[in-house]
Every structure is written in C-alpha cells, then in structure tokens.
Amino acid sequence: MIAVTYAQGGKLHLEDIPVPKIQEDEMLVRVQVTSICGTDLRIIKHGHNKLQTGQKIVLGHEFSGIIDAIGKRVRNYQVGQRVAVAPNIGCGHCDQCLEGRANMCPDYSAFGINFDGAHAEFVKVPASAISQGNVMPLADGVSFEEAALNEPLSCVINGIAACRINLGDTVLIFGAGPIGLLHLILAKLRGVGIVIVTDLINSKLDMAKRLGADHVIDPQTCDIKETVLNLTQGKGANVIVTACPVHSVQEQSIELVAPFGRICLFGGLPHERPKISINSNLIHYRNLIVTGVTGGSNYDYRTGLKLLALKKVDLMKVVSASYPLSEGYDAFQAALSGNEMKVIMNPHG
Ligand SMILES: [Zn+2]
Ligand SMILES: [Zn+2]
Image (cartoon, rainbow, N blue to C red):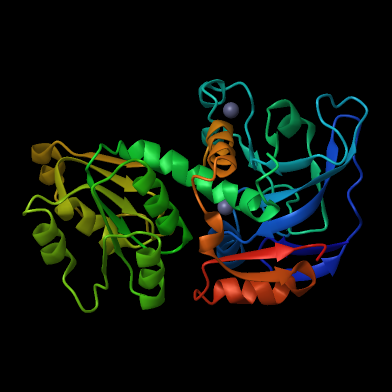
C-alpha cells in the first residue's frame, strides 16, 4: 500500500509498504480521508521527542475510514462500519487518564506520532485504542472529510472550554489558520458578543470574515491595541486565544485583555525558545486567567462528532486543497508552503 512515512532525523517519503497485519484484539481500517496537521509539519521539520533516531513511522492522526477487518476478540464493531478514530491513547492508570484526559497522560502514545498513522491506504488500530473507546462510529450524515477534521475540532473544543466564554464576551483570536478559524466557529456557537481576528495574511482574514468574524485586523496596516480598545470602550477583550506560535503575540495578549479576562495559549512556542517576557502585575491586578491546552480528550472528540451530526459546524469551509494519497508528496509541499488552510488526502480516490 502507499504511505507517507518519516524517519526521525530524516525526510518525508512516499513509499510502498505492506498492509499491516492485525492480531486478535486489533482492527484494520481502510482509510477514506486523512488530513495533514501542523503537528505533521513540525515532526518533519524538527522530529518528535517520542521517536528514536532513525525510527520510521507512517504519519497521520486526523482520519476516518471503514472497518476492513476485525480480530476475533474485538466486540461491538462490524466490518464495513464507518468510523473516525481519536488519535491519543493513554496508559489508562494515571490521574489524567482516570479523568478521561488521555491527551494529558505523561505516557500517551498516538497514531502518526510514535506508531504508524493514517497517511496510508490502511491503518492498524491497536487493542488499547479499541478498549479505550477511540474508535467512534459515524452518524449517516457525517462525511469522511468532516470526520477526519474532527480531530482538530476536538482540540479546539478543549481550547474553547478553557476560555470560559460568557454570553456577550468580546473574543480576540490571533491567527486565522484552521485552528484560529475553528475557534471563531465555536466561539460564535457559544453566544459571544463580537469576535475579532488578526492575521498577517489577507486571504486568511477574508476567510475569517466569511466565517462570521465581526472585525479583522492586519497588524501591518492597523494598530491592534488601538483597534481592540476602540471596539471595547477601552476595556480590552474578555477572551484572547493565541492560535499561532509567536512570542510577541503571547506577550501582547496580556496587554489587551480586560479585567477578569481569560487568555488561552493554544499555539505552543518552539521547544528551544519557550520563554516570553510579560508584565505579571497585569495578571495580578486585573485578576486574569492565563491558561493553555494541548490536544483533546476522547470525550471532546465525541462532542465534535455530535456537533457534526447535528450540522452545527461546517468544517469543509477550512479545507483548501484535496489530493489523492498517491500525490501525498505534493500535498505536503502545499501544506508546508503556508498558503493553504487544511489539506486533505484521499488514499483510494
Ligand atoms: Zn492534528
Ligand atoms: Zn495515563
């Protein structure tokens, strides 16, 4: 089968590898749609601390498909079932796992990060993922494309919960990439007052407008602080989301938030330079909450599928390109260019 692989410390390859063999407690999923994530791009550029030097994996953790084969000890699933699979698997024993937050497990493993993922024609689902409920059947009205994109949606569901949005709040989102736009879509669902989105790329700001942003700001032509203060009668935003890995944005967000405001640092900074400089008195005197999230839980994933089944969110709006997996190398080049929103691949089409 064709697969997009990466070896730690090396390069991306499109290659022909054997279809995985499954054990009695595993299943094989025929991948219908697999989506390229910023995490894939980061692994290609910087490697991943869960991989040994030279260790090769099939990338891809945002996917949906059809169950192709199940081991004889697997219960509650059938061959032919349409499914999406949450990618993070916890140890099952630590405090975070017992809270249902396998994405926070110190020992988590994940598709396409430390074992073979879904940028392939078929993907093997390990026993632990089946027993922890990661394999979720799709409602009839949910397409494979939407289901693959449910993974980033589930992470943003986690992020939006951390923002504690109240009715009528002003929300400022830094970054109009797919993650910023998903925050915009979910913030609107939560009954916010106004949403302001800022980005350096105008086409992305246009997309934010089409998705319902009340104001968009290009910081190259417009002062963010002045605009935000003007729009909020000098108070600042109630909620700020940093959906970009930029030091100055994190620093600036502390200056732009209203008393009792919440800041969610969604985009992490590069591991080799994670420090910022802020006036911490602003947090103290304004009673701020500065938080962050990484990934989403299986429950967040299920919530995303529920929103999709109810047609509450339209994820197709964040897809900008679609490739057959046989052109996976080109798909990755497009994603790496930074000009695309979500790039999806079809292994069998
Ligand atoms: Zn992802
Ligand atoms: Zn755990």
